[in-house]
Amino acid sequence: MATVTSMTASAIQSRLDLKADAATALTKNNNLSDVQDKSVARTNLNLAQRLGIDVRDYGAVGDGIANDTTAIQNALAAALPGTTVHLSGTHYISAPLKIPPQVRLTGNNGSHLDESAKPSLVLASTFSGAAAILIQDQVTGGYSSISNEQHVMNLSIDFNNVAGSNVVDGIQVQGFVSGGVLDNIGIFEPTGYGVNFVSNASGIASSWRAFRVTVVFPLNYGINATINDTTWIDCEVKSGLLNGWQVGNGVNSTFIGCRADNNTQNGFYFDSSASGNYVGGQLFVGCSTNRNGQNGVLIPSAANGKAPINFTGCRFQRDGSTSTSAGYAGVNVNGSTQPVILSGCQSSPGVDSSGSGNNSPQYGLSVTSGNVRVDGGVWHAVNEGIHDGGSNVYLRRGVDVLERTGTIGSPVDVVRGVQTTNGNSGSLDVPGNLAGIPTPSSHAALAWTYDPSAANISGTVTSGIVYLSALYVQKKATAVKIFWDVQTAGATPTSGRNFIGLYDPSGTLVASVGIDARVTTTGLFTETISVAVSPGLYRIAWLFNATTTPAISRRNLIIDASLANFNLAASSFRFATYSSGLIALPSTLTLASLVATNVDNWAAIA
Image (cartoon, rainbow, N blue to C red):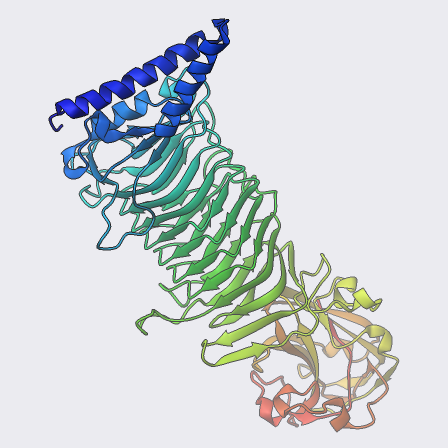
Protein backbone atom coordinates (compact mmCIF):
# COMPACT_ATOMS: atom_id res chain seq x y z
CA MET A 1 0.00 0.00 0.00
CA ALA A 2 1.28 3.49 -0.76
CA THR A 3 2.68 5.72 2.01
CA VAL A 4 0.07 7.96 3.64
CA THR A 5 1.18 11.61 3.63
CA SER A 6 0.59 13.94 6.60
CA MET A 7 -2.07 15.82 4.60
CA THR A 8 -3.85 12.57 3.76
CA ALA A 9 -3.56 11.40 7.35
CA SER A 10 -5.10 14.66 8.53
CA ALA A 11 -7.98 14.29 6.09
CA ILE A 12 -8.54 10.73 7.20
CA GLN A 13 -8.58 11.76 10.83
CA SER A 14 -11.09 14.53 10.19
CA ARG A 15 -13.46 12.14 8.44
CA LEU A 16 -13.02 9.50 11.11
CA ASP A 17 -13.72 12.04 13.83
CA LEU A 18 -16.86 13.18 12.03
CA LYS A 19 -18.09 9.61 11.62
CA ALA A 20 -17.23 8.75 15.21
CA ASP A 21 -19.25 11.75 16.39
CA ALA A 22 -22.18 10.69 14.23
CA ALA A 23 -21.98 7.06 15.35
CA THR A 24 -21.79 8.05 19.02
CA ALA A 25 -24.72 10.40 18.61
CA LEU A 26 -26.75 7.67 16.92
CA THR A 27 -26.08 5.30 19.79
CA LYS A 28 -27.10 7.83 22.41
CA ASN A 29 -29.87 9.52 20.45
CA ASN A 30 -32.74 7.83 22.24
CA ASN A 31 -31.33 8.89 25.60
CA LEU A 32 -30.74 12.54 24.71
CA SER A 33 -33.19 14.93 26.28
CA ASP A 34 -31.72 18.07 24.86
CA VAL A 35 -33.21 19.00 21.50
CA GLN A 36 -30.03 20.77 20.47
CA ASP A 37 -27.93 17.62 21.05
CA LYS A 38 -30.30 15.60 18.90
CA SER A 39 -30.14 18.24 16.18
CA VAL A 40 -26.34 18.19 16.19
CA ALA A 41 -26.35 14.39 15.93
CA ARG A 42 -28.66 14.45 12.93
CA THR A 43 -26.60 17.20 11.27
CA ASN A 44 -23.37 15.24 11.70
CA LEU A 45 -24.96 12.09 10.31
CA ASN A 46 -26.44 13.85 7.28
CA LEU A 47 -23.18 15.62 6.56
CA ALA A 48 -21.23 12.36 6.76
CA GLN A 49 -23.65 10.65 4.40
CA ARG A 50 -23.64 13.54 1.90
CA LEU A 51 -19.87 13.81 1.84
CA GLY A 52 -19.45 10.09 1.42
CA ILE A 53 -16.06 8.43 1.58
CA ASP A 54 -13.23 8.73 -0.90
CA VAL A 55 -11.19 5.53 -0.73
CA ARG A 56 -8.02 7.63 -1.12
CA ASP A 57 -8.67 8.95 2.36
CA TYR A 58 -8.06 5.41 3.56
CA GLY A 59 -4.84 4.99 1.63
CA ALA A 60 -6.05 3.74 -1.76
CA VAL A 61 -3.90 4.92 -4.68
CA GLY A 62 -6.01 4.08 -7.74
CA ASP A 63 -3.14 3.76 -10.20
CA GLY A 64 -3.92 0.16 -11.19
CA ILE A 65 -0.60 -0.98 -9.72
CA ALA A 66 -0.70 -0.56 -5.93
CA ASN A 67 -2.83 -3.14 -4.13
CA ASP A 68 -5.82 -1.17 -2.83
CA THR A 69 -7.81 -4.10 -1.40
CA THR A 70 -7.32 -3.32 2.29
CA ALA A 71 -7.79 0.42 1.88
CA ILE A 72 -11.10 0.01 0.02
CA GLN A 73 -12.36 -2.56 2.48
CA ASN A 74 -11.53 -0.30 5.40
CA ALA A 75 -13.45 2.52 3.73
CA LEU A 76 -16.47 0.24 3.23
CA ALA A 77 -16.33 -0.94 6.84
CA ALA A 78 -16.26 2.66 8.09
CA ALA A 79 -19.26 3.75 5.99
CA LEU A 80 -22.45 4.54 7.86
CA PRO A 81 -25.82 3.40 6.48
CA GLY A 82 -26.78 5.58 3.52
CA THR A 83 -23.17 6.51 2.76
CA THR A 84 -21.52 6.32 -0.67
CA VAL A 85 -17.97 5.02 -0.95
CA HIS A 86 -16.23 6.56 -3.98
CA LEU A 87 -13.56 4.78 -5.98
CA SER A 88 -11.04 7.09 -7.64
CA GLY A 89 -9.12 5.82 -10.62
CA THR A 90 -8.29 2.18 -11.33
CA HIS A 91 -7.91 0.00 -8.26
CA TYR A 92 -5.90 -3.21 -8.18
CA ILE A 93 -7.45 -5.78 -5.84
CA SER A 94 -6.50 -9.29 -4.75
CA ALA A 95 -9.49 -10.27 -2.59
CA PRO A 96 -13.27 -9.64 -2.54
CA LEU A 97 -14.67 -6.25 -1.58
CA LYS A 98 -17.52 -6.79 0.89
CA ILE A 99 -20.27 -4.16 0.88
CA PRO A 100 -22.13 -3.73 4.20
CA PRO A 101 -25.90 -3.15 4.39
CA GLN A 102 -27.24 0.18 3.06
CA VAL A 103 -23.85 1.25 1.68
CA ARG A 104 -23.19 2.35 -1.89
CA LEU A 105 -20.01 1.66 -3.84
CA THR A 106 -19.48 3.78 -6.94
CA GLY A 107 -16.72 4.11 -9.50
CA ASN A 108 -16.16 6.57 -12.32
CA ASN A 109 -16.70 4.24 -15.31
CA GLY A 110 -19.68 2.24 -16.40
CA SER A 111 -20.90 -0.61 -18.51
CA HIS A 112 -19.05 0.20 -21.75
CA LEU A 113 -15.34 0.93 -21.96
CA ASP A 114 -13.33 2.37 -24.82
CA GLU A 115 -9.62 3.06 -25.18
CA SER A 116 -9.84 6.34 -23.26
CA ALA A 117 -11.54 4.80 -20.21
CA LYS A 118 -9.94 2.67 -17.54
CA PRO A 119 -11.76 0.04 -15.44
CA SER A 120 -12.67 0.82 -11.86
CA LEU A 121 -11.35 -2.51 -10.56
CA VAL A 122 -8.59 -4.73 -11.94
CA LEU A 123 -8.22 -8.17 -10.41
CA ALA A 124 -4.76 -9.42 -9.55
CA SER A 125 -3.50 -12.63 -11.12
CA THR A 126 -3.27 -13.94 -7.57
CA PHE A 127 -6.86 -12.99 -6.72
CA SER A 128 -8.36 -15.28 -4.10
CA GLY A 129 -12.07 -15.37 -3.28
CA ALA A 130 -15.55 -16.01 -4.65
CA ALA A 131 -16.08 -12.67 -6.41
CA ALA A 132 -14.61 -9.25 -7.01
CA ILE A 133 -17.56 -7.75 -5.11
CA LEU A 134 -19.24 -9.81 -2.40
CA ILE A 135 -22.60 -8.96 -0.83
CA GLN A 136 -23.62 -11.21 2.04
CA ASP A 137 -26.68 -11.92 4.15
CA GLN A 138 -26.83 -10.91 7.81
CA VAL A 139 -25.45 -14.12 9.32
CA THR A 140 -22.75 -14.76 6.71
CA GLY A 141 -21.61 -11.15 6.81
CA GLY A 142 -21.78 -10.94 10.60
CA TYR A 143 -24.02 -7.86 10.56
CA SER A 144 -26.09 -6.71 13.51
CA SER A 145 -29.19 -6.09 11.39
CA ILE A 146 -30.79 -7.42 8.21
CA SER A 147 -28.64 -7.15 5.10
CA ASN A 148 -30.28 -4.98 2.45
CA GLU A 149 -30.02 -1.93 0.17
CA GLN A 150 -26.46 -2.42 -1.07
CA HIS A 151 -25.85 -0.38 -4.22
CA VAL A 152 -23.10 -0.87 -6.82
CA MET A 153 -22.95 1.96 -9.36
CA ASN A 154 -20.89 3.34 -12.27
CA LEU A 155 -18.31 0.64 -11.95
CA SER A 156 -16.34 -1.64 -14.29
CA ILE A 157 -14.44 -4.81 -13.40
CA ASP A 158 -11.61 -6.25 -15.51
CA PHE A 159 -10.61 -9.93 -15.18
CA ASN A 160 -7.90 -9.89 -17.83
CA ASN A 161 -5.17 -10.94 -15.36
CA VAL A 162 -7.10 -13.88 -13.85
CA ALA A 163 -6.45 -17.39 -15.17
CA GLY A 164 -9.49 -19.28 -16.43
CA SER A 165 -8.89 -22.04 -13.88
CA ASN A 166 -9.40 -19.52 -11.07
CA VAL A 167 -13.20 -19.29 -11.01
CA VAL A 168 -14.23 -15.86 -9.76
CA ASP A 169 -17.58 -14.06 -10.16
CA GLY A 170 -17.85 -10.38 -10.92
CA ILE A 171 -20.56 -9.66 -8.33
CA GLN A 172 -21.83 -12.39 -6.04
CA VAL A 173 -24.78 -12.00 -3.68
CA GLN A 174 -24.95 -14.69 -0.99
CA GLY A 175 -28.18 -15.64 0.75
CA PHE A 176 -31.14 -13.44 1.56
CA VAL A 177 -30.23 -9.85 0.70
CA SER A 178 -33.08 -7.63 -0.46
CA GLY A 179 -33.53 -4.27 -2.12
CA GLY A 180 -30.10 -4.04 -3.73
CA VAL A 181 -29.30 -2.02 -6.85
CA LEU A 182 -26.85 -2.59 -9.71
CA ASP A 183 -26.57 0.49 -11.90
CA ASN A 184 -24.29 1.04 -14.91
CA ILE A 185 -21.98 -1.92 -14.36
CA GLY A 186 -19.48 -3.44 -16.80
CA ILE A 187 -17.90 -6.84 -16.12
CA PHE A 188 -15.29 -8.00 -18.60
CA GLU A 189 -14.05 -11.58 -19.03
CA PRO A 190 -15.15 -13.00 -15.65
CA THR A 191 -13.89 -16.53 -15.08
CA GLY A 192 -17.11 -17.36 -13.21
CA TYR A 193 -20.50 -15.67 -13.49
CA GLY A 194 -20.67 -11.98 -14.26
CA VAL A 195 -23.48 -11.53 -11.71
CA ASN A 196 -24.40 -14.46 -9.48
CA PHE A 197 -27.09 -14.85 -6.81
CA VAL A 198 -26.29 -17.82 -4.54
CA SER A 199 -28.69 -19.38 -2.05
CA ASN A 200 -27.72 -20.56 1.43
CA ALA A 201 -29.45 -21.35 4.71
CA SER A 202 -30.91 -17.84 4.82
CA GLY A 203 -32.55 -18.26 1.40
CA ILE A 204 -31.83 -16.30 -1.75
CA ALA A 205 -31.87 -12.61 -2.66
CA SER A 206 -35.08 -10.86 -3.63
CA SER A 207 -36.42 -7.52 -4.83
CA TRP A 208 -33.32 -6.22 -6.61
CA ARG A 209 -33.12 -3.66 -9.42
CA ALA A 210 -30.50 -3.80 -12.17
CA PHE A 211 -29.93 -1.12 -14.82
CA ARG A 212 -27.50 -1.27 -17.75
CA VAL A 213 -25.40 -4.19 -16.53
CA THR A 214 -23.12 -5.57 -19.25
CA VAL A 215 -21.20 -8.85 -19.04
CA VAL A 216 -18.73 -9.58 -21.85
CA PHE A 217 -16.84 -12.84 -22.53
CA PRO A 218 -17.89 -14.71 -19.35
CA LEU A 219 -16.44 -18.20 -18.97
CA ASN A 220 -19.58 -19.28 -17.08
CA TYR A 221 -23.14 -17.99 -17.44
CA GLY A 222 -23.15 -14.22 -17.77
CA ILE A 223 -25.99 -13.43 -15.36
CA ASN A 224 -27.63 -15.81 -12.93
CA ALA A 225 -31.04 -14.19 -12.57
CA THR A 226 -32.65 -16.88 -10.41
CA ILE A 227 -34.19 -14.46 -7.92
CA ASN A 228 -37.76 -13.33 -7.37
CA ASP A 229 -39.43 -9.92 -7.54
CA THR A 230 -36.59 -8.33 -9.49
CA THR A 231 -36.45 -5.91 -12.41
CA TRP A 232 -33.72 -5.99 -15.04
CA ILE A 233 -33.51 -3.06 -17.47
CA ASP A 234 -31.14 -2.73 -20.47
CA CYS A 235 -28.84 -5.50 -19.24
CA GLU A 236 -26.77 -7.56 -21.67
CA VAL A 237 -24.62 -10.69 -21.83
CA LYS A 238 -22.50 -11.17 -24.92
CA SER A 239 -19.93 -13.65 -26.23
CA GLY A 240 -20.13 -16.05 -23.29
CA LEU A 241 -18.74 -19.59 -23.48
CA LEU A 242 -21.95 -21.08 -22.02
CA ASN A 243 -25.50 -19.70 -21.72
CA GLY A 244 -25.89 -15.94 -21.55
CA TRP A 245 -28.61 -15.74 -18.88
CA GLN A 246 -29.73 -18.34 -16.37
CA VAL A 247 -33.35 -17.83 -15.35
CA GLY A 248 -34.84 -20.23 -12.79
CA ASN A 249 -36.38 -18.90 -9.62
CA GLY A 250 -37.58 -15.64 -11.03
CA VAL A 251 -41.24 -15.42 -10.12
CA ASN A 252 -42.70 -11.93 -10.45
CA SER A 253 -39.56 -10.66 -12.19
CA THR A 254 -39.50 -8.31 -15.17
CA PHE A 255 -36.91 -8.02 -17.94
CA ILE A 256 -37.07 -4.85 -20.06
CA GLY A 257 -34.85 -4.31 -23.09
CA CYS A 258 -32.39 -7.03 -22.02
CA ARG A 259 -30.13 -8.75 -24.53
CA ALA A 260 -28.20 -11.97 -25.13
CA ASP A 261 -25.79 -11.86 -28.07
CA ASN A 262 -23.25 -14.28 -29.53
CA ASN A 263 -23.19 -16.71 -26.60
CA THR A 264 -21.94 -20.21 -27.39
CA GLN A 265 -25.01 -21.95 -26.00
CA ASN A 266 -28.44 -20.38 -25.36
CA GLY A 267 -29.18 -16.71 -24.93
CA PHE A 268 -31.75 -17.10 -22.10
CA TYR A 269 -31.82 -20.51 -20.42
CA PHE A 270 -34.61 -21.35 -17.99
CA ASP A 271 -32.77 -23.62 -15.60
CA SER A 272 -34.91 -26.15 -13.75
CA SER A 273 -32.08 -28.34 -12.52
CA ALA A 274 -31.62 -26.77 -9.07
CA SER A 275 -33.74 -28.28 -6.33
CA GLY A 276 -36.84 -26.27 -5.57
CA ASN A 277 -36.56 -23.98 -8.58
CA TYR A 278 -39.94 -22.60 -9.55
CA VAL A 279 -39.75 -21.78 -13.22
CA GLY A 280 -42.17 -19.20 -14.58
CA GLY A 281 -43.80 -15.94 -13.62
CA GLN A 282 -41.46 -13.74 -15.65
CA LEU A 283 -42.36 -10.90 -18.01
CA PHE A 284 -40.00 -10.06 -20.89
CA VAL A 285 -40.67 -6.77 -22.68
CA GLY A 286 -38.66 -5.63 -25.70
CA CYS A 287 -35.86 -8.12 -25.03
CA SER A 288 -33.71 -9.59 -27.79
CA THR A 289 -31.32 -12.38 -28.74
CA ASN A 290 -28.82 -12.36 -31.57
CA ARG A 291 -26.56 -15.03 -33.08
CA ASN A 292 -26.41 -17.34 -30.08
CA GLY A 293 -24.95 -20.74 -30.92
CA GLN A 294 -28.01 -22.73 -29.86
CA ASN A 295 -31.42 -21.24 -29.05
CA GLY A 296 -32.22 -17.63 -28.41
CA VAL A 297 -34.48 -18.81 -25.56
CA LEU A 298 -34.63 -22.38 -24.25
CA ILE A 299 -37.44 -23.38 -21.87
CA PRO A 300 -37.05 -27.09 -21.03
CA SER A 301 -39.24 -29.23 -18.81
CA ALA A 302 -39.59 -28.13 -15.19
CA ALA A 303 -41.22 -30.16 -12.43
CA ASN A 304 -42.21 -26.96 -10.65
CA GLY A 305 -43.06 -24.98 -13.76
CA LYS A 306 -46.58 -23.62 -13.27
CA ALA A 307 -46.64 -19.82 -13.63
CA PRO A 308 -46.82 -18.26 -17.12
CA ILE A 309 -43.83 -16.83 -18.95
CA ASN A 310 -44.74 -13.81 -21.06
CA PHE A 311 -42.75 -12.37 -23.98
CA THR A 312 -44.08 -9.11 -25.41
CA GLY A 313 -42.53 -7.28 -28.35
CA CYS A 314 -39.33 -9.34 -28.21
CA ARG A 315 -36.88 -9.97 -31.07
CA PHE A 316 -34.94 -13.17 -31.84
CA GLN A 317 -32.34 -12.92 -34.61
CA ARG A 318 -29.97 -15.39 -36.28
CA ASP A 319 -29.77 -17.81 -33.34
CA GLY A 320 -28.79 -21.47 -33.74
CA SER A 321 -25.57 -20.52 -35.52
CA THR A 322 -23.71 -23.75 -34.66
CA SER A 323 -26.10 -26.11 -36.47
CA THR A 324 -28.77 -26.04 -39.16
CA SER A 325 -30.16 -29.49 -38.26
CA ALA A 326 -30.18 -29.68 -34.45
CA GLY A 327 -33.64 -28.15 -34.12
CA TYR A 328 -32.44 -24.83 -32.70
CA ALA A 329 -34.89 -21.94 -32.67
CA GLY A 330 -35.31 -18.33 -31.73
CA VAL A 331 -37.58 -19.66 -28.95
CA ASN A 332 -37.54 -23.36 -28.10
CA VAL A 333 -40.16 -24.67 -25.67
CA ASN A 334 -39.18 -28.30 -25.15
CA GLY A 335 -41.16 -30.23 -22.56
CA SER A 336 -42.22 -27.24 -20.50
CA THR A 337 -45.93 -27.34 -19.70
CA GLN A 338 -46.42 -24.01 -17.96
CA PRO A 339 -48.09 -21.42 -20.22
CA VAL A 340 -45.73 -19.50 -22.49
CA ILE A 341 -47.26 -16.41 -24.11
CA LEU A 342 -45.65 -14.68 -27.11
CA SER A 343 -47.29 -11.42 -28.21
CA GLY A 344 -46.08 -9.25 -31.06
CA CYS A 345 -42.69 -10.95 -31.22
CA GLN A 346 -40.45 -11.52 -34.23
CA SER A 347 -37.75 -13.91 -35.34
CA SER A 348 -35.50 -13.63 -38.35
CA PRO A 349 -32.71 -15.74 -39.88
CA GLY A 350 -29.26 -14.67 -41.00
CA VAL A 351 -25.55 -15.38 -41.15
CA ASP A 352 -22.60 -13.81 -39.35
CA SER A 353 -22.08 -10.08 -39.79
CA SER A 354 -19.06 -10.94 -41.96
CA GLY A 355 -21.37 -12.75 -44.37
CA SER A 356 -20.04 -16.20 -43.43
CA GLY A 357 -21.40 -18.92 -41.16
CA ASN A 358 -24.65 -20.87 -41.09
CA ASN A 359 -27.91 -19.28 -42.15
CA SER A 360 -29.99 -19.93 -39.04
CA PRO A 361 -32.10 -20.64 -37.03
CA GLN A 362 -33.83 -23.74 -38.33
CA TYR A 363 -37.08 -22.68 -36.62
CA GLY A 364 -38.41 -19.35 -35.42
CA LEU A 365 -40.53 -20.91 -32.65
CA SER A 366 -40.30 -24.62 -31.86
CA VAL A 367 -42.76 -26.24 -29.44
CA THR A 368 -42.58 -29.87 -28.26
CA SER A 369 -44.83 -31.10 -25.43
CA GLY A 370 -45.46 -27.46 -24.61
CA ASN A 371 -48.24 -25.10 -23.64
CA VAL A 372 -47.87 -22.07 -25.90
CA ARG A 373 -49.99 -19.18 -27.16
CA VAL A 374 -48.77 -17.03 -30.06
CA ASP A 375 -50.53 -13.78 -30.89
CA GLY A 376 -49.40 -11.35 -33.55
CA GLY A 377 -45.86 -10.94 -34.83
CA VAL A 378 -43.65 -12.38 -37.56
CA TRP A 379 -41.89 -15.75 -37.22
CA HIS A 380 -39.28 -16.20 -39.93
CA ALA A 381 -36.71 -19.00 -40.01
CA VAL A 382 -34.90 -21.11 -42.55
CA ASN A 383 -37.14 -24.21 -42.40
CA GLU A 384 -40.29 -23.27 -40.45
CA GLY A 385 -41.50 -20.09 -38.85
CA ILE A 386 -43.47 -22.05 -36.23
CA HIS A 387 -42.54 -25.71 -35.73
CA ASP A 388 -44.98 -28.12 -34.09
CA GLY A 389 -42.82 -30.77 -32.42
CA GLY A 390 -45.90 -32.72 -31.31
CA SER A 391 -47.43 -33.90 -28.01
CA ASN A 392 -48.37 -30.35 -27.07
CA VAL A 393 -50.84 -29.52 -24.33
CA TYR A 394 -51.70 -26.42 -26.35
CA LEU A 395 -50.18 -24.73 -29.36
CA ARG A 396 -52.47 -21.82 -30.09
CA ARG A 397 -51.71 -19.56 -32.99
CA GLY A 398 -53.79 -16.40 -32.91
CA VAL A 399 -54.76 -13.94 -35.58
CA ASP A 400 -52.28 -11.63 -37.30
CA VAL A 401 -49.33 -14.02 -37.15
CA LEU A 402 -47.09 -14.16 -40.22
CA GLU A 403 -44.87 -17.18 -40.81
CA ARG A 404 -41.98 -17.13 -43.26
CA THR A 405 -39.29 -19.50 -44.49
CA GLY A 406 -36.11 -19.01 -46.49
CA THR A 407 -33.54 -16.25 -46.28
CA ILE A 408 -34.09 -12.77 -44.94
CA GLY A 409 -33.57 -11.41 -48.45
CA SER A 410 -36.00 -13.83 -50.15
CA PRO A 411 -38.70 -14.78 -47.65
CA VAL A 412 -41.54 -17.12 -48.55
CA ASP A 413 -44.79 -16.40 -46.71
CA VAL A 414 -46.68 -19.37 -45.23
CA VAL A 415 -50.40 -18.65 -45.16
CA ARG A 416 -52.53 -20.47 -42.60
CA GLY A 417 -55.72 -18.40 -42.61
CA VAL A 418 -57.45 -17.34 -39.39
CA GLN A 419 -55.21 -18.59 -36.62
CA THR A 420 -56.65 -20.03 -33.44
CA THR A 421 -57.72 -23.35 -31.97
CA ASN A 422 -59.45 -25.16 -29.17
CA GLY A 423 -57.59 -26.85 -26.36
CA ASN A 424 -58.05 -30.44 -27.51
CA SER A 425 -56.55 -30.33 -30.96
CA GLY A 426 -53.55 -28.03 -30.52
CA SER A 427 -54.22 -27.04 -34.13
CA LEU A 428 -52.43 -24.14 -35.72
CA ASP A 429 -55.38 -23.27 -37.93
CA VAL A 430 -58.97 -22.17 -37.68
CA PRO A 431 -61.28 -24.52 -35.76
CA GLY A 432 -64.57 -23.88 -37.52
CA ASN A 433 -66.53 -24.67 -34.35
CA LEU A 434 -65.70 -21.15 -33.16
CA ALA A 435 -68.34 -20.15 -35.69
CA GLY A 436 -70.65 -22.99 -34.67
CA ILE A 437 -69.24 -25.42 -37.25
CA PRO A 438 -67.94 -28.89 -36.27
CA THR A 439 -64.25 -29.62 -36.81
CA PRO A 440 -62.26 -32.87 -36.96
CA SER A 441 -61.26 -32.37 -33.31
CA SER A 442 -64.95 -32.44 -32.38
CA HIS A 443 -64.86 -36.08 -33.50
CA ALA A 444 -61.44 -36.80 -31.98
CA ALA A 445 -59.99 -36.84 -35.50
CA LEU A 446 -56.94 -35.16 -37.00
CA ALA A 447 -58.39 -34.20 -40.40
CA TRP A 448 -61.20 -34.96 -42.81
CA THR A 449 -62.01 -34.28 -46.41
CA TYR A 450 -65.13 -32.38 -45.30
CA ASP A 451 -67.84 -32.55 -42.60
CA PRO A 452 -69.38 -36.05 -42.78
CA SER A 453 -72.87 -34.55 -42.51
CA ALA A 454 -72.37 -33.35 -46.08
CA ALA A 455 -71.88 -36.90 -47.40
CA ASN A 456 -75.44 -37.48 -48.59
CA ILE A 457 -75.13 -39.91 -51.53
CA SER A 458 -72.81 -42.67 -52.69
CA GLY A 459 -71.34 -43.75 -55.98
CA THR A 460 -69.22 -46.41 -57.62
CA VAL A 461 -65.82 -45.88 -59.21
CA THR A 462 -63.91 -47.41 -62.08
CA SER A 463 -61.67 -50.39 -61.43
CA GLY A 464 -57.92 -49.96 -61.81
CA ILE A 465 -57.95 -46.18 -61.25
CA VAL A 466 -56.71 -44.47 -58.07
CA TYR A 467 -59.25 -42.00 -56.66
CA LEU A 468 -57.88 -39.27 -54.37
CA SER A 469 -59.54 -36.96 -51.83
CA ALA A 470 -57.43 -34.31 -50.08
CA LEU A 471 -57.43 -33.51 -46.38
CA TYR A 472 -55.41 -30.89 -44.53
CA VAL A 473 -53.39 -31.93 -41.50
CA GLN A 474 -52.89 -28.97 -39.15
CA LYS A 475 -50.57 -30.33 -36.47
CA LYS A 476 -47.81 -32.83 -35.94
CA ALA A 477 -49.21 -36.14 -34.67
CA THR A 478 -49.37 -39.88 -35.31
CA ALA A 479 -52.32 -40.99 -37.43
CA VAL A 480 -53.54 -44.45 -36.39
CA LYS A 481 -56.88 -44.74 -38.19
CA ILE A 482 -58.49 -44.12 -41.58
CA PHE A 483 -62.28 -43.79 -41.60
CA TRP A 484 -64.41 -44.27 -44.74
CA ASP A 485 -67.92 -45.47 -45.54
CA VAL A 486 -69.69 -47.76 -48.05
CA GLN A 487 -73.42 -47.45 -48.71
CA THR A 488 -73.90 -50.12 -51.37
CA ALA A 489 -71.82 -53.29 -51.51
CA GLY A 490 -69.89 -54.33 -54.56
CA ALA A 491 -69.31 -57.83 -55.91
CA THR A 492 -66.55 -60.24 -56.89
CA PRO A 493 -63.36 -58.41 -55.81
CA THR A 494 -60.08 -59.58 -57.31
CA SER A 495 -58.04 -60.91 -54.42
CA GLY A 496 -55.15 -58.74 -53.26
CA ARG A 497 -55.99 -55.85 -55.61
CA ASN A 498 -58.21 -53.58 -53.50
CA PHE A 499 -56.63 -50.94 -51.27
CA ILE A 500 -57.14 -47.77 -49.29
CA GLY A 501 -54.04 -45.68 -48.54
CA LEU A 502 -52.58 -42.35 -47.43
CA TYR A 503 -50.19 -40.17 -49.44
CA ASP A 504 -48.11 -37.42 -47.86
CA PRO A 505 -47.73 -33.88 -49.32
CA SER A 506 -44.83 -35.00 -51.54
CA GLY A 507 -46.94 -37.77 -53.11
CA THR A 508 -45.25 -40.63 -51.22
CA LEU A 509 -47.41 -43.55 -50.11
CA VAL A 510 -47.10 -43.71 -46.29
CA ALA A 511 -49.86 -46.24 -45.56
CA SER A 512 -51.65 -48.94 -47.56
CA VAL A 513 -54.32 -51.33 -46.28
CA GLY A 514 -55.87 -54.23 -48.19
CA ILE A 515 -59.68 -53.98 -48.30
CA ASP A 516 -60.81 -57.00 -50.34
CA ALA A 517 -63.26 -57.92 -47.59
CA ARG A 518 -64.81 -54.44 -47.56
CA VAL A 519 -65.91 -54.62 -51.18
CA THR A 520 -68.90 -56.85 -50.49
CA THR A 521 -70.05 -55.25 -47.22
CA THR A 522 -71.45 -51.89 -46.09
CA GLY A 523 -70.97 -49.48 -43.19
CA LEU A 524 -68.44 -47.14 -41.62
CA PHE A 525 -65.02 -48.77 -41.75
CA THR A 526 -61.95 -48.12 -39.62
CA GLU A 527 -58.55 -49.13 -41.03
CA THR A 528 -55.52 -49.34 -38.74
CA ILE A 529 -52.34 -47.47 -39.71
CA SER A 530 -49.41 -45.82 -37.96
CA VAL A 531 -48.07 -42.74 -39.69
CA ALA A 532 -46.28 -39.68 -38.30
CA VAL A 533 -47.94 -36.69 -39.95
CA SER A 534 -47.04 -32.99 -40.04
CA PRO A 535 -48.95 -29.91 -41.17
CA GLY A 536 -49.71 -30.15 -44.87
CA LEU A 537 -51.98 -31.54 -47.61
CA TYR A 538 -52.42 -35.33 -47.47
CA ARG A 539 -54.58 -37.50 -49.71
CA ILE A 540 -56.72 -40.58 -49.07
CA ALA A 541 -56.49 -43.00 -51.99
CA TRP A 542 -58.87 -45.78 -53.09
CA LEU A 543 -58.12 -48.50 -55.64
CA PHE A 544 -60.62 -51.20 -56.53
CA ASN A 545 -60.49 -54.16 -58.85
CA ALA A 546 -63.89 -55.89 -58.79
CA THR A 547 -66.71 -56.93 -61.06
CA THR A 548 -68.82 -54.32 -59.26
CA THR A 549 -67.07 -51.68 -57.18
CA PRO A 550 -68.68 -50.57 -53.89
CA ALA A 551 -70.55 -47.26 -53.69
CA ILE A 552 -68.50 -44.96 -51.42
CA SER A 553 -70.22 -42.23 -49.38
CA ARG A 554 -69.74 -38.77 -50.85
CA ARG A 555 -71.54 -35.52 -51.60
CA ASN A 556 -73.64 -34.86 -54.67
CA LEU A 557 -71.32 -34.98 -57.62
CA ILE A 558 -69.76 -31.57 -58.10
CA ILE A 559 -71.14 -30.24 -61.36
CA ASP A 560 -67.70 -29.82 -62.88
CA ALA A 561 -64.27 -31.27 -62.07
CA SER A 562 -62.69 -27.92 -62.80
CA LEU A 563 -64.97 -26.25 -60.27
CA ALA A 564 -63.96 -28.81 -57.63
CA ASN A 565 -60.32 -27.81 -58.12
CA PHE A 566 -60.66 -24.25 -59.33
CA ASN A 567 -57.52 -22.12 -59.43
CA LEU A 568 -55.33 -25.02 -58.30
CA ALA A 569 -52.33 -26.51 -60.08
CA ALA A 570 -52.54 -30.27 -60.72
CA SER A 571 -50.12 -30.94 -57.86
CA SER A 572 -52.59 -29.29 -55.46
CA PHE A 573 -55.86 -30.83 -56.71
CA ARG A 574 -58.24 -31.69 -53.88
CA PHE A 575 -60.17 -34.32 -55.84
CA ALA A 576 -58.33 -36.24 -58.53
CA THR A 577 -57.67 -39.57 -60.25
CA TYR A 578 -54.37 -41.16 -61.12
CA SER A 579 -53.38 -43.58 -63.84
CA SER A 580 -55.36 -46.68 -64.91
CA GLY A 581 -54.99 -50.44 -65.04
CA LEU A 582 -53.38 -50.51 -61.61
CA ILE A 583 -53.43 -53.52 -59.29
CA ALA A 584 -51.71 -51.83 -56.31
CA LEU A 585 -51.30 -48.30 -55.04
CA PRO A 586 -48.15 -46.79 -56.57
CA SER A 587 -45.36 -45.99 -54.08
CA THR A 588 -45.13 -42.45 -55.44
CA LEU A 589 -47.56 -40.18 -57.24
CA THR A 590 -46.34 -37.86 -59.96
CA LEU A 591 -48.37 -34.96 -58.64
CA ALA A 592 -48.21 -32.99 -61.87
CA SER A 593 -50.01 -35.92 -63.55
CA LEU A 594 -53.10 -35.81 -61.34
CA VAL A 595 -56.37 -35.52 -63.27
CA ALA A 596 -59.20 -33.43 -61.86
CA THR A 597 -62.41 -35.27 -60.98
CA ASN A 598 -65.82 -34.36 -59.60
CA VAL A 599 -65.87 -37.51 -57.42
CA ASP A 600 -65.42 -36.32 -53.83
CA ASN A 601 -65.30 -39.46 -51.66
CA TRP A 602 -65.42 -38.83 -47.89
CA ALA A 603 -62.70 -39.97 -45.48
CA ALA A 604 -60.97 -38.93 -42.26
CA ILE A 605 -57.86 -39.78 -40.26
CA ALA A 606 -57.43 -39.88 -36.49
